[in-house]
Amino acid sequence: MAVRNIVLYAQDAAVLRKKSKPVRSIGRGVKHLIRDLKDTLAHSSDGIGLAAPQIGVHRRVVVVRLGRYGGSGEEPDLSIALINPKVIDAGEEQRDFDGCLSFPGLYGETVRPHHLRVTGLDERGRPFDSAFEGFDAVVVHHEMDHLDGVLFVDRVQGLEDLYRVRVGENGELVRVPVQAICL
Ligand code: ZN
Image 1 (cartoon, helix red, strand yellow):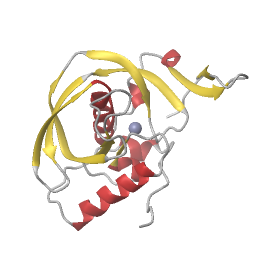
Image 2: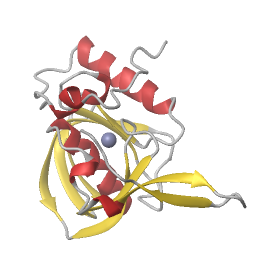
Image 3: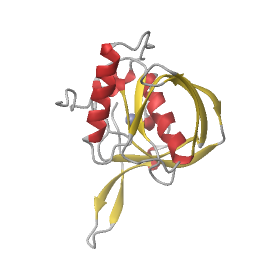
């Protein structure tokens, strides 16, 4: 199956800012959308989550890979879909690392809850009520933000919290401050 929407809408603010509508029924269209999201995520080397608006579809569907960076310990390369996700409880917010497939090479330090209880439908249309902890909660929160047109650059406290990364002389990763960002 070819990846239909490998082009991510990098700087297309209008697409990323538009709110997504709830999914009414899990039909072929939604199943196709989930497959596209999973395929696109699987083809990205460092992506851990993707939301439908990032591939230009404004429906409330996200896919996440859990268990990265010391999270829940689940199979790291398996992604799961969350349909119409809704936060029903959130823990204390903490500073953590953030990045986004729609902003390649840009990273930041954002403040997000490290405990999240979310309800919604799984990809078979069955209701779920799940708790996400640690970085898994950060990832789910980041992706759910996309459904409301909120981007990680909105959640940094200042430009000094945004940076790019380059490889230094000795192979080490060096943070390069971002001077400005246009959205
Ligand atoms: Zn993102």
